[in-house]
Length: 222
Image (cartoon, rainbow, N blue to C red; front, side, top):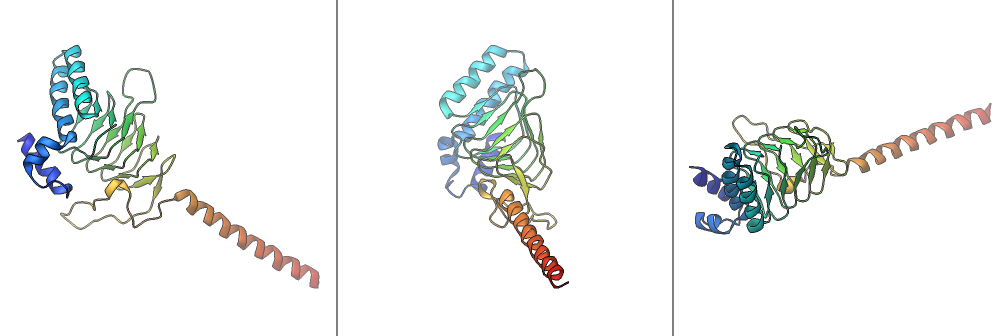
């Protein structure tokens, strides 16, 4: 059931996946999740060292590092995969899509919850870093190379360093899944919130200068 579901998810969301056998044999993201299931099973049974060794072997074979204590939901897709790091206390919901070089990292050396929680249907673009025990809400999008250090609300897209929300259209039709944004970077929104703010400030400054010039002319006439 697990393998059938995973293979079907890859075939539905990756146009390069031409057959179930190809996904089973050639997709390191799928292999990494299989290794993690083995390691996580050992970890939950108290076999800490065997779990770490199993995870280490999975990392060696796939280039994807998942701590055996991390919690992963159903149908996780890790596209390309090389360089992905998922920390010990990370929690990932169902139908999450991660690209290569994504890091779900911690910002503290203290024990306890220190890695992110990723909600259902989240897409995280290549090179993105989500750091700390924060929540990324359902259907959120994290743009490529974004650095996320604070919580992301559901149905929100964030981009940049540090990541900031940007406006985007979200599919809200009853019974339909949210629109898939490749690399977590939609093309129907302003992708540079800082530039947007600068343009807004420039417009406000130009308006202020015009008002001052009008005031100066009035005073000169008087």
